Length: 282
Image 1: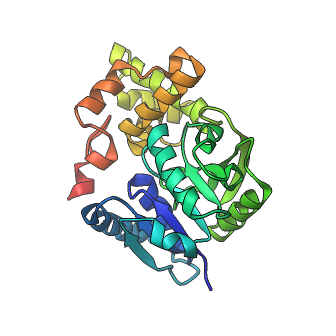
Image 2: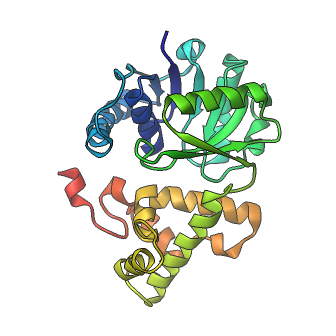
Image 3: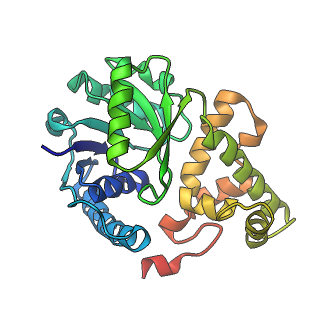
């Protein structure tokens, strides 16, 4: 029998992880709160599978099977692992993880988070040894490395099972210790916040900030195009977590980012962020 995972949350990261899994022959049950959300997710996943083939070439295995559901509970028993990919809100994640862990003792449970400490969420689960963190990058079906977070209570069996799953997915895990923001977000997110402040202060345009970071410092896309890819709303949520848990003022979301969230300009997924993406929606 092939691998099967349960992905909870059909947003940007949930659909991206699902796309990655399907391309590598892993079947997925994708769960969210409504059939409308799931229908939109199916459309997005189909588009991402086509994009992945253009970027990475044809898949080497037959694709996995995609099922969708509005409840995780019926599908838990057949899953090799559960990946929670809901919004970057500790209380929402804790509620989901509590429900899943009560129904799936012994099944590896992965919280996909960019900033929330795993051990903070482990208090919500029945067996803390089953829980660990991952930070897949966007788009996860393109970026080959995954930050894996081992909490103080994460067990050997769960760590080994997730290492095996990531190998099937063709991803290189780098395991780090638990801390707010881990490594990637702790470094990247304050830098993006500083870049947004520079634009807000009128020192340079978003285009010029990114051009300098790519042309002079070798950043592959520039911090503000990266912000649009992450999602400005997701970025603000993660910065807020970092600021609250570390006290680092560089992580206090700047006014420009907060205003963009209020105005609904969340980046590529809404068609407008620091840049316009109308062509994505045609």
